[in-house]
Image 1: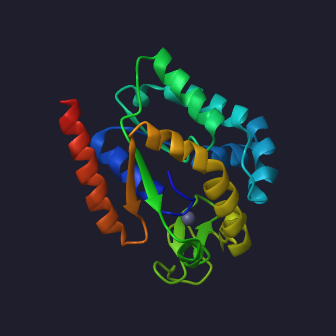
Image 2: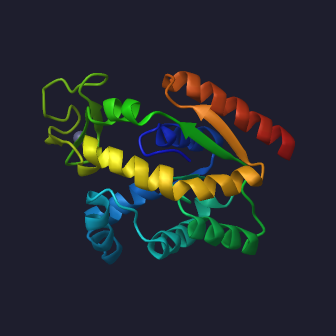
Length: 216
Ligand SMILES: [Zn+2]
């Protein structure tokens, strides 16, 4: 858990690849649905552009389907879900039905102004979603994808105002009760996500190794 842009996705996709787990990222799944023009995608599009939260029923249905896929059988990392109490309760009942449980909740703490500096420089290519950063990872030619030559653009949800709104609505307001719920359950590990990616990665690895040790 953590505000959008805190680096959860980077760590989750790395961990998933290294440890044979499914990486279940609701943000990516929603963007794919928008791109494909499905009914879910059309409903989600206008909501996300305003920095608002996609309704629980929509997200829960998507997760239920995803957890049933073969790559999630030996374990999974949820990225961007659950963000609200109804989502958290829906997840618990889904997992209980399958005799599974949440092993840990990693919380990525970061200041909103640090997020804005990170995200407002981000550019994405139209063809395939390749990600650049104006300062940290610029394309060879301004405005053009190195890989496929397609146009680079700034996603609506990477605009500073949308980042601030999303931080407040999705993280401070909506996630607070979920976080409290998981803290009460003793599942939460807090990480300082403002550090460089490698430092965060090392800490995440230590935590997962400890958990694997407990499970073994
Ligand atoms: Zn590209």
